[in-house]
Image (cartoon, rainbow, N blue to C red):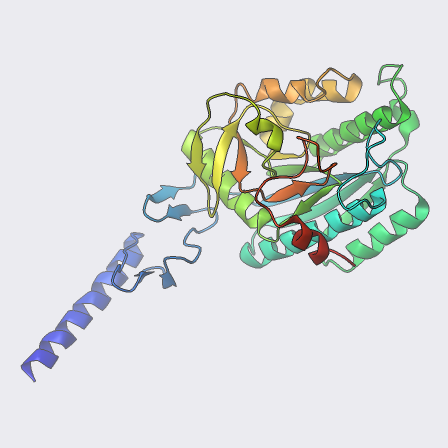
Length: 337
């Protein structure tokens, strides 16, 4: 009986200690059963609290300095051009509209998963389109209609950009520049904490939005400044012998990179501050087109996930396309209509 009483006293003390730690905001770990009594979670669950703290075992806790309350995802679509100014075919050898449709379906799945996790974040999905046939726009509308995500479709009047964009570019290049410029204007004129610019040939994993939001808050708090996040682990960044650093996100490793394509997530604060530099990409084509972005990365950390959260569906031999170590065929099939 004496042993039982001692055990009861120990259990009572343990419960009181856990309650005190929870009130004070401290987290404790019970390594005997791989759990956190204060969080009421197993240690392989998501331990972070969005907008409050990021917790990584065994590295501990980072208090969040900037809470995300809203995210606008701006998808630039054009189903009439397979690959800009190229005759190459894409992986899986489909028409361009199929990549656009599957990109949207994958994004919607990722946003819905994020909505379940982050009840207090407002999400909006904006489609900015150039030159897509009416039948493709109708399918895009149908995909959005079933999503239960706030959304809108903007068909761009290219004539508005003829006096802004320099002459001499191909129709496809002009359209691409106008679409990005229009996306920038949307980002500038609407309120949001984060803006995610997306091209219409990126298949997203279901956990991509959750990981990117958690990781943005963590990295902003870690670096004490704005950051840029890429969804894709680009093959071409492994062809260069340059120094990098690796950081722990929520469930992924992220590495510091100095270049990207034009699918990226960052804050409206950064976009407003550097709008004139980004605007150059909508006015003239500098080789490489992303050069103004790369200059911004000299001042702000740009991070890429390992392995990839989204795959760029380019030609299989393109170093700007298919990310390594991803089951792309499954990702492709999972987003079929």
